[in-house]
Length: 405
Image (cartoon, rainbow, N blue to C red; front, top):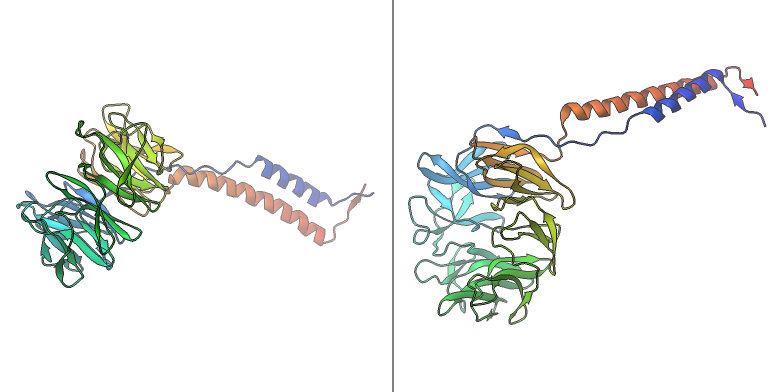
C-alpha cells in the first residue's frame, strides 16, 4: 500500500488539526445587570400585563394617583384620578375591563366598571360594589358584583347591563374551567363558600364557610385555599371541587395565601414562616426555592419565575429560576425592597424603592465584553484552521509533485 502525501497539504492539514484541537470551548452566556428606564412614575403598584404592555397604579401628581401604561418604550397616563382595584382586570372581546374608583373616594361605595380605550378611559359602564377580583368572562358575557349595598351579581354583554338570576350575593375570585364558572359567593349567615354556574344552574359546593381564596385552574382542574377546621379560624388547605362538593388535598404544610404564580404546569406557593417556595402540581408539592423573602413579590414569564429573595445582608435581592437552576440577578440588592414587578415576554420590569427607579432585566442578554471576547477567539482559531486546510487542498488540485512512501 502506498501513502501519497503532498508536502504543503500535509503541513497545512497538520496545523489545522492542531489548531482545532487547541481551540477553546464556547463561553457560557452570563446574565447582565438590569438597565435603568428613564422616566416613569413614582409609587407604582398592582402591575399586570395586557396585550404586550404593562398597566399599573402610580402617582400622577403629588398627592394623587391614577392608571399608567408602559408599552416597552414609553410611559403614558390612562387616567389621572381613577385607580384600579387590585386583581380586578379581565380581557373581554379583546379589550381590557377593570374595576376602578377615584383615588380620593372609597373603594366600597365609589367603584365602577371601566374599559381602557385608545384615548384613555371610558365613561363608567356600571356601578360596582365589591373590590376583590370581581370580574370574570363566561360564555362571552362579563360577570361582576353590582353596586353597594345590595351586591347583586350583574352581567354585561358589551352593550347592556343586566342581572344574573340565581346567584348569591357577591361574586369573588371567579375562574372558568371547562363549561363552568367557579367563584366565591356569600353563604348566610356570615361567610363565603364555593359556587359554580353551568350557564343555567348555580350549585353551592360547600355549606361550612370555607372562605375560598386563591381559586385557580391548573391543567383543567380547579383548586383553592380554604378553611378546613372551623375551630381554627384560618387553618388552610388546597381543595378541589367535585360535582356538588369539595375534597381536601393532603399536603405536608398548609400553603400561605400570599399571591401565587403559575409556571411549568405548577402553582408556585410559599410555605408560611419560611423562605421556601414550592411547586404544587395538582397532587403534591416539590421544593422550588429556599431563597424567597416572603414579601409576596413574584412574577412569571414563559421561561422564568422572578421573585424578591433573601440576601446575605439585611437587604433583599432579586432572583430568577427556570425551575431547575436559579441565580441572583446582579446588582439588585435593595434595603427597602421593590414596589412592584411584572413581565412582558421574558423581560422583567420592576421599581426599586431605594432609588425610586424603574429597571428592566433581560435574562437572555449576555455580558457584552466577556461573551464577545470568548466567541471572537473561537472564531479566529476556526478561521485559521480552515485557512490552512484550504491552502493544502489548493496545492493538491494544482497537481504538485507528491512524495511516495
